[in-house]
Image (cartoon, rainbow, N blue to C red; front, side, top):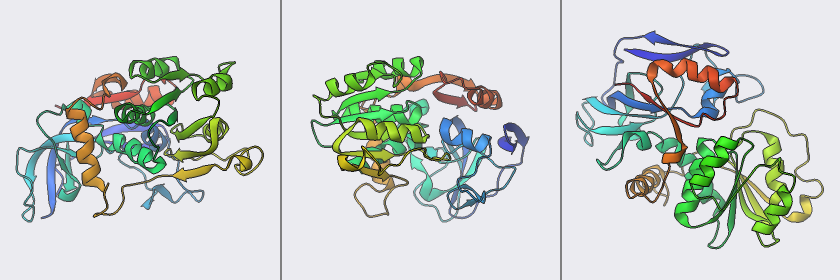
Length: 331
């Protein structure tokens, strides 16, 4: 069996490994499919730390090389720890595991999948939840307009939730392929920020008011600036993308201060016991996918063998932004 490792900046390869050890509270899961989270995985592929000191690769995860990559797997349980009671061998599960044939994972992180939910949609559960949390953090009310800046897998996931919940939506990106996907997914306005009449069309779409909620999923500070420009007075901007660049503008300067904007960030589910804790949020997303209320099929642009993963990383690194949702087959 194999696992993917990043060995140096922009270098990834597969390593042959034995079956992983597992504890009494773990599951052993054999992969059916994994998905690529293009933003996070490209940052790791380039070995860009999350902090200025260069000590951490992820939040609270030390910067160490080689490192595994990815956090989205659907597979079959092949072994169950002695203390695990909620799972059995043969269960099909989603787990936040890296790209590998077999993963050992804490049972409390696994999500048992209903038979009505296809592998290639279930594998995006963690990525979908990033968008789900962002929308709940922004808390738009009925009749409001949500603009999404950056139409990668997280941005398009946010669009899918907005459509399912009935919000008026504006989808913003510079890549024609991604704009076309957003159009297929039902965005009310699909537009490039490079359009000559961009701001005029945003105002026309929002009855001259501006956007109520902006979800920024582009991972660059100019996208935050753009979100603050198009937001109406009292609007909110929710940042879901991790930023490693620096701002070239003042978010409290003119004209932003007088717009009374709220700038929010979101990261991770609330603690257990709260209404939209991890299991409840995942449960809702699975029901919506299974019932065809949450429609994400158009964002799945590539279906590949696991062996193709290093080459896909290279293509993404070279700027091939027509690649959006990628499902890798491990069977």
